[in-house]
Image (cartoon, rainbow over all chains, first blue to last red; front, side, top):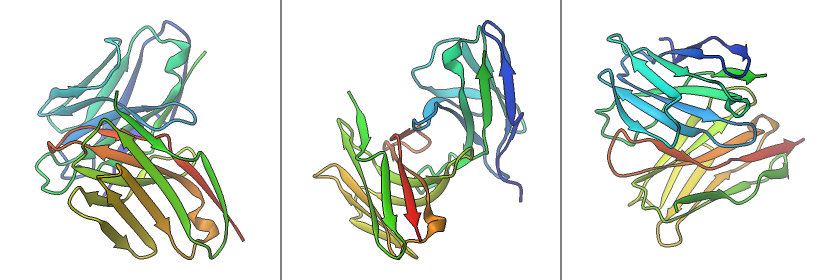
Length: 115
Length: 113
């Protein structure tokens, strides 16, 4: 059973460019969340997708947008990249109907460097 | 504003000792509190979850306590090993299922042999 997968592993972009990151959730999971983790910080919630719609959003600007596909995979898009967007971008999946707490299964992340 | 603090950025202990990590929160009433382990350059890995009505939870050498009056959770690793060296993250979840996790900055544990 494959866990959460993300692509690419690493990415280098320049300021002003746009980037798309991809995530496939763990088998059986229907909800995908994206987190940004700057160096030395804990992950910060960007947004969550369920049934192809954005369910919740953290305190991130509109430059950050996403999409969920019918097969539950997801994309994170960031426009007009800033130096401060350099971070590890984590995708996490879960099942929204879980009775237990919302344990997240994280992917390995995409390391984005903005020059 | 809501705040989560893990009281130390780094903790160094000797192999065989018990490591105790602290997570404090303010202006928050979490339904669940979770602990994750993160190795450098990797995604967090779930360790333990404790509900607001539970005082303590154990899993092998790990123990978590949750005091909603003090707004604090303690995470213990007994008989620590060098392989336990990693960053440990505390995360809170509100009452509604499917909501986002709010993470602390993490505590980096180093266990020396």
